[in-house]
Image 1 (cartoon, rainbow over the protein chains, first blue to last red):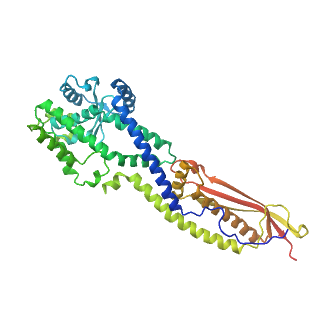
Image 2: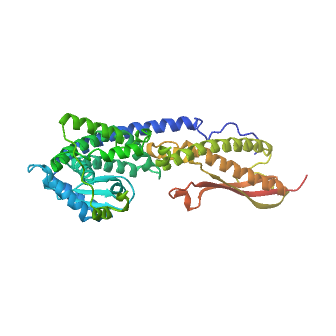
Image 3: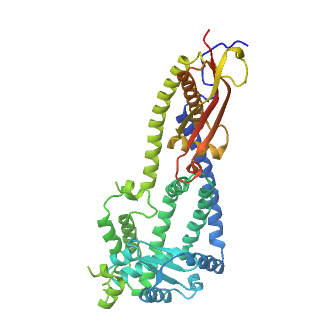
Length: 276
Length: 158
């Protein structure tokens, strides 16, 4: 057999298509599928959230609580209990036994966990300056329980988390949750405003006036001037919350009274930041 | 600015993808140009997979020659492959990787044989493998190795 040298023409082992084109196609397909799944899951979560008995919720909550590292706080618990006592006798919230946890992190945030647990971050406590303000924050979280927002959010997030886990690659969970956050935005901002409004009503029942309800958001909005950062946030810009609260106060003719400052002993309990 | 700091992970991810695409395509283009040029230059040395096919009476000696090349995946290719894993189909982004490793390995084997004065390579074999355990580990970008080996046959001058 005679060997005849011939140059290799073309690359039969390569699929010629431009890789960027492939990337765009694949990403687009993925997004469409995820968006569809997301809405289906959201719908299911919504459906379940309003029908799930409180007992089942408390059971779920007990599972989550074990995972959450935070400590109880008698002072905060006392405030929460006093708020709960102000609820109407027929309120569905009486089925819960609310517990409050303090997280040492500096984040200015608080959130509701299924089953009646509220987690408050130290950073938030450092920001509030009166009992009324603190009660407004707690009442807002109770509002989430009343609307069962925490279950809705959890249902969606749980399902999304599953999808994200199923995807190969290590960045994909972050990517999926980030994208989901974009979809979630409008939806959850509406929930936040509803919880604010509900909290305001409870604050009025507690004090007979709504003094201090807006102070917290006013301080936050002075701190965060940029609306851009809130474009993708799950919470509305503090200024929007401030405006919406003011509007409700006006509509309902709520009186705005003097706020009750923390006593010196309470300030210490709340952490050093509350003093200034 | 706050968006950037809050989404550091994502920004890093996108940057790595862009870097992977730009650097990866550039490197690939240059590598292919070099591969084609050298393939033409070394065209006259036969590399065959069968054992005979040479004038046995003229053989002075024979010797093992090897050539190997390791090519790394870039982030963009990896991203494409991850997406491919979801939908199935040809993992095109890895094809060029394997192709380059293979051709480069053959070229290096030929270069070794030529340097030693061999006339042809018989019983040519090719292996590929993923390099290191990192190839399958999280947050690691793997690479592929192609190893070409064969028997270089030396003929006495006529």
